[in-house]
Length: 354
Image 1 (cartoon, rainbow, N blue to C red):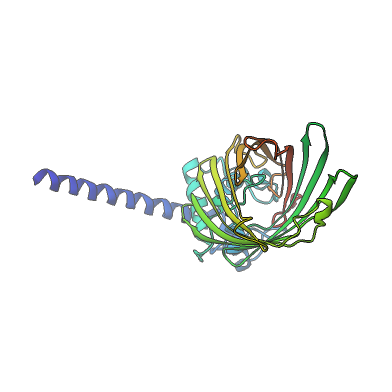
Image 2: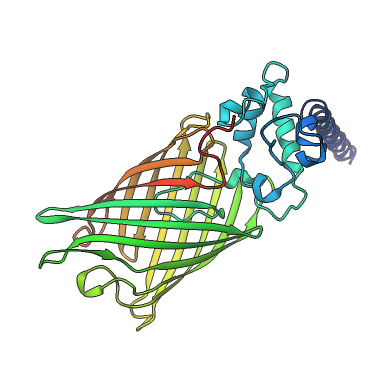
């Protein structure tokens, strides 16, 4: 009994010490922000609350629609190395010689708290995009997805798609996909527009620590492509899906499960779609390299796609990926494909703001 009471007291004292340390960290971060940052960014993170001291409008940390999409890693680099390190204005100074790593991380955590509406998902869940697997995080992006299919003894086919994604509200995303194809029909090469796809996605869970996220969505494919020429499926299709992601520091796991039902004979012609992607950021600088491997499939078909991704500018507004999709099962029904994407995050500036 005495031993149990002693353990309870020790645990209570340890919890008090942790709470005190956290309060000291928050107080320290608040002081650092007030002394070094508030003059430009405003005492609440809103630069409109102070007289401008810079030519370029400072970042508004209180604007949740903007700040919530940013990962901590980008802010850490900006605080430590200054604006130019993340492709932004040179008027943002570097504090790496004045603040240690613990202080910088505490300041970034404090900046995260300036978005007062807690319904927005944490920007640390805005993970690098896989080539195929749907991201769970809502996006403002334009993505071009080219692919070249190769099968022995058959002319190569080329496909491409342009996807436009728009975030609305705290947790919602709408996207529209415009597919194009150049295929060999057996009677000559056919080129044209494929089946237009429209999707809506909503985040149903995202933890505040920025390590777990779950989204649900609905997608409709319209028979806009000429099925007789091999450019479409010839029927309207409906798909419900769930997308989830987990972050582990510089590593991440992203998954998607979907059920597609055609308008005609839906249950007989149903298709189970699945994807899983494991990625790792090789570097932590803004123009980072990410390597990954992705498993995708439909019903009994399964393919593996090793891939590499590169941020092309320091603001992460542009990125590119390339990979090779290799059939694993049902190999007579699948082609070897060279795949990739070019991505534009239109929320972010492409060129550095002076």
